[in-house]
Every structure is written in structure tokens, then in C-alpha cells.
Image (cartoon, rainbow, N blue to C red; front, side):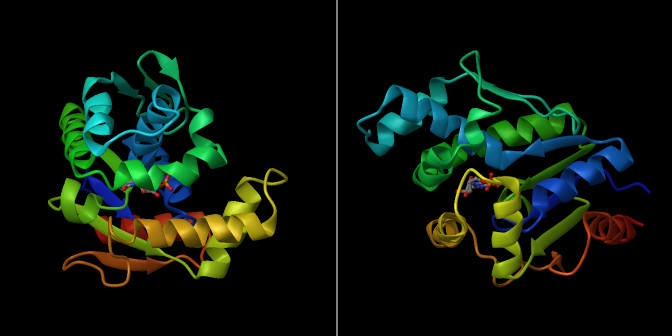
Length: 217
Ligand code: C5P
């Protein structure tokens, strides 16, 4: 198939990362987790401004940061100002603060430009996942998918990911709170024109990937 640039959006726990990585591996494409970019920026912000900062200060910090994104689906790694934050960005304290950074308009502008540079550097042979990829970052993607799942399924998936590190109540709270905090970032209830909605509630990752590949043919 000629399709190369795949844009996949969805809320927390929709199965986006698992699906996007598997798709990239199966088709031999690059893989970019844009949520990890917002998380890396958040890690730097919390490190440098433990007492908080103005919107302008946060934007300046992101503008001046050297953010490195590795785009292999087997080993996606992220570093900021030379610090490898791949593991740290999954910590609950990052998840709790990320929406604050992600709702900063200037930060979004800067990171969107960076995402487009990475897509161009891959000559559009890449799977990009996030919240606004199908609508803002790459509305011209060859295949655009909005991945959704019932809240119960999303909570259960997150709980499995953080097994033992958080209680069920904490995970439920985190997933639902981030839905609410992110509602200003993107709208998951109505898909934009040309975006295909796939409900992964009752599908395995392989089944979701099969459907996405079928869209590309
Ligand atoms: O996908 P993940 O849950 O790791 O994303 C972390 C956060 O990054 C989201 O909750 C959202 O605030 C932000 N994000 C965004 N735009 C994207 C990807 C992620 O605002 N394209």
C-alpha cells in the first residue's frame, strides 16, 4: 500500500500506544508518541520550577529545551536537555501535571512545529499518535484514526499498565480527570471529517491494527 503517514488520536487508555507501535512495527515505519513529548516538557518544568511558573516562563523553558525523540517502535526513548526521561515520564506526578503544560498555547505551537519536523525528516513514513494529530498536526495524513474505548475498558488497561503502583480508585480518578483536563485540548466525542472512528473496547491490538491497515489499502 502507498499509505505512509498514519495519524492516530484517542483518549488516555484507548490503546493508542500499543496499536501505533504494533502498526509501525508491522509496516516498518517510524513511531512518534507525541504525548511523551508533552510529558518530557512537563518533567523539565517540574524540575526547574518546583514552585510553579507563569505561562510565558513555561513556554520559554520549552522553547529553549533540547528535546530528543527516538522514533523506533521497539525502543522509543526521550531525552530533554541531555536527561533521559523515558521512564520518569510515566510517573503519576507527570500524568497529574501534564495537562497544565499541554494547555499552554505557545507550548503547543512549539511542540507541533517539532512534530512536523520529525514527520518531514522521516519523509512521512511514520505513525504518529496523540490527541490532535488527525486535526492539527497532520490533517493531511494518509490514514486518520480516532481510537475510542469505553471508560471502564480504559481504566482497566491503565490499571494493568501501572500494576501495583496505584490503586483502582487512583487509576479511575487519573483517567477521568485527565479526560476532563484534556477536554480543552481536543474533542473526542465527534470525529473530524475524514477521520475513521475505531472502538477498541472489544478488539485486541492486532485486530485494531488489521482494521487500520485495511483502511490504507
Ligand atoms: O498520550 P498520553 O496520555 O501520554 O499524553 C499525555 C498528555 O499529553 C495528554 O493528557 C495531553 O494533555 C497531552 N497531549 C496533547 N496533545 C497530544 C498528545 C498529548 O495535548 N498530541
